[in-house]
Image (tube, rainbow, N blue to C red; front, side, top):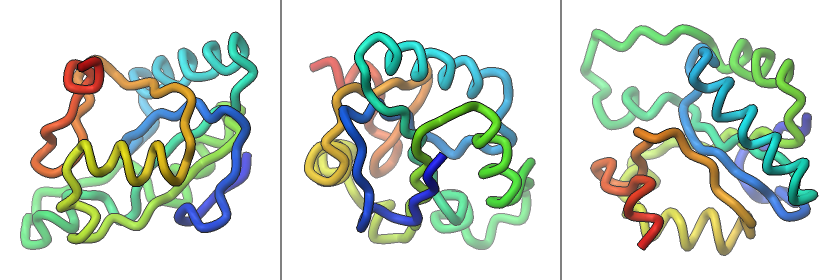
Length: 140
Protein backbone atom coordinates (compact mmCIF):
# COMPACT_ATOMS: atom_id res chain seq x y z
CA UNK A 1 0.00 0.00 0.00
CA UNK A 2 1.33 3.40 -0.99
CA UNK A 3 0.71 6.05 1.66
CA UNK A 4 0.26 9.59 0.34
CA UNK A 5 0.28 12.62 2.64
CA UNK A 6 -1.79 14.93 0.47
CA UNK A 7 -2.27 14.68 -3.28
CA UNK A 8 0.86 16.30 -4.69
CA UNK A 9 2.35 13.03 -5.95
CA UNK A 10 -0.80 10.92 -6.13
CA UNK A 11 -1.22 8.79 -9.24
CA UNK A 12 -3.46 5.79 -9.70
CA UNK A 13 -4.94 3.90 -12.60
CA UNK A 14 -8.75 4.20 -12.68
CA UNK A 15 -8.92 4.93 -8.93
CA UNK A 16 -11.88 3.56 -7.03
CA UNK A 17 -12.15 5.71 -3.92
CA UNK A 18 -13.82 5.59 -0.54
CA UNK A 19 -13.77 8.49 1.90
CA UNK A 20 -13.94 8.63 5.66
CA UNK A 21 -12.21 9.05 8.98
CA UNK A 22 -11.88 5.26 9.43
CA UNK A 23 -11.27 5.59 13.16
CA UNK A 24 -10.75 2.09 14.47
CA UNK A 25 -11.36 0.51 11.04
CA UNK A 26 -14.41 -1.32 12.41
CA UNK A 27 -16.57 -3.96 10.69
CA UNK A 28 -18.66 -1.38 8.82
CA UNK A 29 -15.48 0.17 7.42
CA UNK A 30 -14.24 -3.27 6.43
CA UNK A 31 -17.48 -3.96 4.54
CA UNK A 32 -17.11 -0.72 2.55
CA UNK A 33 -13.47 -1.57 1.80
CA UNK A 34 -14.42 -5.11 0.75
CA UNK A 35 -16.90 -3.60 -1.73
CA UNK A 36 -14.22 -1.17 -2.90
CA UNK A 37 -11.82 -4.05 -3.57
CA UNK A 38 -14.56 -6.07 -5.34
CA UNK A 39 -15.23 -3.14 -7.69
CA UNK A 40 -11.49 -2.77 -8.32
CA UNK A 41 -11.21 -6.43 -9.32
CA UNK A 42 -14.22 -6.04 -11.60
CA UNK A 43 -12.99 -2.84 -13.28
CA UNK A 44 -9.21 -3.13 -13.13
CA UNK A 45 -9.01 0.01 -11.00
CA UNK A 46 -6.77 0.73 -8.04
CA UNK A 47 -8.23 0.90 -4.52
CA UNK A 48 -7.91 4.18 -2.64
CA UNK A 49 -8.92 5.10 0.89
CA UNK A 50 -9.11 8.87 1.36
CA UNK A 51 -8.91 9.85 5.02
CA UNK A 52 -7.98 12.90 7.05
CA UNK A 53 -5.51 14.07 9.65
CA UNK A 54 -6.18 15.52 12.08
CA UNK A 55 -9.64 14.13 12.76
CA UNK A 56 -12.23 16.62 11.41
CA UNK A 57 -13.88 17.18 14.79
CA UNK A 58 -10.54 18.36 16.20
CA UNK A 59 -10.55 21.16 13.62
CA UNK A 60 -14.22 22.15 13.52
CA UNK A 61 -14.75 21.77 17.31
CA UNK A 62 -11.30 22.32 18.85
CA UNK A 63 -12.68 23.06 22.33
CA UNK A 64 -14.80 19.93 22.50
CA UNK A 65 -13.37 17.68 25.18
CA UNK A 66 -15.46 14.59 24.44
CA UNK A 67 -13.49 13.48 21.35
CA UNK A 68 -12.16 10.00 21.99
CA UNK A 69 -10.41 8.38 19.05
CA UNK A 70 -10.01 4.63 18.76
CA UNK A 71 -6.73 4.74 16.88
CA UNK A 72 -3.77 7.00 16.25
CA UNK A 73 -2.86 7.86 12.67
CA UNK A 74 -0.06 5.26 12.84
CA UNK A 75 -2.47 2.58 14.05
CA UNK A 76 -4.96 3.54 11.33
CA UNK A 77 -2.28 3.13 8.66
CA UNK A 78 -1.33 -0.29 10.07
CA UNK A 79 -4.98 -1.44 10.21
CA UNK A 80 -5.67 -0.31 6.65
CA UNK A 81 -2.45 -1.90 5.40
CA UNK A 82 -3.84 -5.28 6.51
CA UNK A 83 -6.71 -4.85 4.00
CA UNK A 84 -4.55 -5.02 0.86
CA UNK A 85 -5.30 -1.55 -0.46
CA UNK A 86 -3.34 0.02 -3.29
CA UNK A 87 -3.33 3.56 -1.89
CA UNK A 88 -4.03 5.44 1.30
CA UNK A 89 -4.37 9.21 1.02
CA UNK A 90 -4.05 11.07 4.32
CA UNK A 91 -5.31 14.55 3.53
CA UNK A 92 -4.65 17.51 5.83
CA UNK A 93 -7.94 18.54 7.41
CA UNK A 94 -7.87 22.32 7.84
CA UNK A 95 -10.52 24.99 8.40
CA UNK A 96 -10.14 25.97 4.74
CA UNK A 97 -10.71 22.37 3.63
CA UNK A 98 -13.69 22.11 6.01
CA UNK A 99 -15.31 25.07 4.27
CA UNK A 100 -15.42 23.31 0.87
CA UNK A 101 -18.93 22.50 -0.29
CA UNK A 102 -19.53 18.91 -1.25
CA UNK A 103 -19.69 19.98 -4.92
CA UNK A 104 -16.38 21.82 -4.51
CA UNK A 105 -14.85 18.77 -2.86
CA UNK A 106 -16.08 16.40 -5.57
CA UNK A 107 -14.91 18.65 -8.39
CA UNK A 108 -11.60 20.02 -7.07
CA UNK A 109 -10.37 16.95 -5.17
CA UNK A 110 -12.04 13.79 -6.46
CA UNK A 111 -12.38 14.72 -10.14
CA UNK A 112 -9.67 17.29 -10.89
CA UNK A 113 -6.87 15.98 -8.65
CA UNK A 114 -7.60 12.27 -8.19
CA UNK A 115 -9.37 11.54 -11.49
CA UNK A 116 -11.59 8.96 -9.79
CA UNK A 117 -13.44 6.38 -11.81
CA UNK A 118 -15.83 5.28 -9.04
CA UNK A 119 -16.74 6.35 -5.52
CA UNK A 120 -17.82 3.88 -2.84
CA UNK A 121 -19.55 5.23 0.27
CA UNK A 122 -21.45 3.83 3.18
CA UNK A 123 -25.20 4.39 3.14
CA UNK A 124 -24.97 7.12 5.78
CA UNK A 125 -21.72 8.82 4.78
CA UNK A 126 -21.84 12.63 4.68
CA UNK A 127 -19.19 15.01 3.37
CA UNK A 128 -18.51 18.60 2.42
CA UNK A 129 -19.20 21.78 4.39
CA UNK A 130 -21.83 21.13 7.07
CA UNK A 131 -21.91 17.48 5.90
CA UNK A 132 -24.28 18.52 3.08
CA UNK A 133 -23.18 15.90 0.56
CA UNK A 134 -24.27 12.28 0.63
CA UNK A 135 -25.01 9.34 -1.65
CA UNK A 136 -28.34 10.82 -2.75
CA UNK A 137 -26.81 14.20 -3.65
CA UNK A 138 -24.14 12.49 -5.74
CA UNK A 139 -26.72 10.56 -7.74
CA UNK A 140 -28.26 13.79 -9.05
